[in-house]
Image 1 (cartoon, helix red, strand yellow):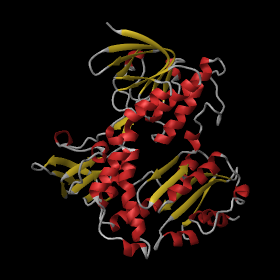
Image 2 (cartoon, one colour):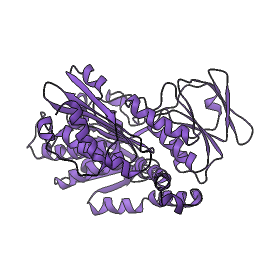
Image 3 (tube, one colour):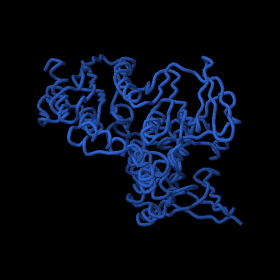
Length: 473
């Protein structure tokens, strides 16, 4: 017999997005059930953001020390791979979600472990691991926050060849002797460098260029750094076939006919919304995409269904998904109270407006790339009268930071409004400068006022003064 329960809000997916929307709904006076089939905390906590950055950080710290006289002479040996992996394990809470489950309970959110499927309007069927089925009826809203899953490319032989996705490599128990990486986006590039620094021989294959979503001068700085460290970077290179080669090896044949042998194969060719198995087709909705408004509501389903985070396929970044979740949770609570209708004000409490104009993102390679807002090409495609200013990062602060500091900075200006609408920084530790650019873009700070935001001397942030000077201020 199926048990039936009720709650104001049912959230399918217990990652950071699901946690945040449930938390905001409860803060707004509603009850919420969080449904999770794996670990509470989601991909970011256990197989992506947190453990991957732990793997990257040790190598970056060693590289920084080696870039400075005095510190360089004090450093002996290579990275201790076992200690790096142990720190990675700690940052992933040793794949134990009891701490996050405790937080969920402390916030007044009910946790339901099992697979969630939408079985009707405002209704979710949860199947636990032991086969027990519980139906939860939502008085106000059902939220899909199921994240994303890897896209597996159509490469001959891949179905018959053992390969790793980012989840498997990030949680690896030891460092492979050699790795071939197919896919040179953010995840592939970050992990290629991280495991090269841990001692693996790495080949990175890009169908076009590496990090092609970012301005070419920024991507080239990362590419040059990877090659200098010994990563073999193959750009404009296609993969013809892959095959298992013996007990512990994989063979990758390129379109050129050349073959690469390695112990492990990482396929990191992007992700897609995880919408399979949710019962969407039975509701007349598509499992390949759910268009939603700025509050996350799927208007084609009526007034009760929301989709957020990677599942919404707007901006696949953890911090942006949490931002969407805060807006959506507040909107659900306000609509339940009768204080909010269909329309929401841009840049207001209930709208995730920044998704369209001010999305910050960081590539945590060494050197880093930090970007927010629109590129020049995107702005022009949007019909904006945009201009570009760019220059090498060569200020007193960068010279003090490290010997041979190599960096690049760019700002994109809306000439009609005289505000910055995009910025990119490339170089060591530039991620910590990104929020200043995010504030300038989200706040639409006029250039003439931005001129009075004086950067401290001697810091790398002085590059903002140089950009404004080159612009003509």
